[in-house]
Image 1 (spheres, chains in turn green, orange, blue, cyan):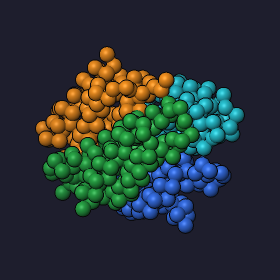
Image 2: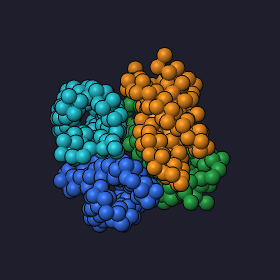
Image 3: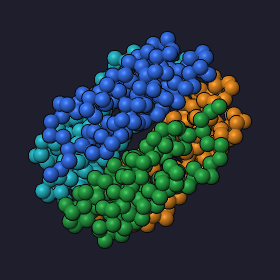
Image 4: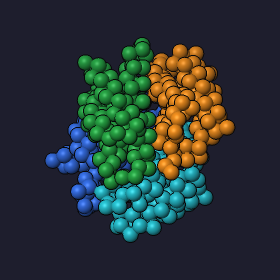
Length: 114
Length: 114
Length: 114
Length: 114
């Protein structure tokens, strides 16, 4: 039997959370580069890059029904949590929005892993 | 001024279309590999891979407000159209769903490019 | 201090192994789709996709000096080993070459993790 | 007939150039974030991200023998050339190395397209 989801409903929740997180991280990294005090945003940009890349991979693996999605879900949850914590320190709207998207994604990962 | 969208509303439309297309292609490729007559699905799987990869890249570029998103949008539209045409030939639900997601994505690309 | 490698020499070894593995998996998946008995190659193609995606991400993380490279290296080693085992079952040159590239990559991951 | 290279020799040249360019861009972006005057490096970091992503995709497409590699090769050449021009303005070793890798990659793309 092919190893893929027979119902897309549960997976759509995590796919949406992952994709929103990717987009928020990408946008936040770009916007950080346009801030006056970019040097304060370096940690944020670094985490945005890693978080976007890891979430994007997990989204692909979830969509294709790969068992490796579950293997990476904890690391994904961790990088989302770290990125949320860093972004939450900055008052820029893009950072606050990114923190929210990362937290929501970490929560979706937790449910998927559960 | 940083080169990123100031409103996310228009971009969310194309981001959703791209992400749904990526997921549909990933799912379709996996499901094709589980079909009885895989050899008839080879062209479909090949296009699914390329279409998912190109749409995923364009989604990242759109989200970060890169000018390169616009440079790649025509190629993205073309691979979506090709993938839709191939998938539409097969009666499997995953192929029909993928064809619909690819067509919707091609249309979203056309509007974004417009 | 920025978190990036100060010497590229050690990292070049694992980057080369990862990139060769990505290319071998991509080539093997395409070539499998062209084989007469594609249905026997489904597991191989599935693993090729996951292995290529995971190795490609780890290569990016290693190159940028991310701590997350180390977090993912065990999973990378495991998928390379699994893909090598599956590919080794098939006599097609592309499968044998892919098995070799995957084994070499798993070994490079082991040394990097060491 | 499967659509994949029967000889890896010519393709290995462009694969190596693309992979070196990806790694140089990733490293340069991280290193730029660690520089004292990050605000002067914003354009460099932005181009590093796009260049790495586009080269990484083209490498995957070339490795799998996809016709879409050729469709994207001009855009790849252009982003490499732009990134080389921007990096060359900065005296940091990582920028100079990245400029060299981007120029070499643009040249490899030109030969591949030719």
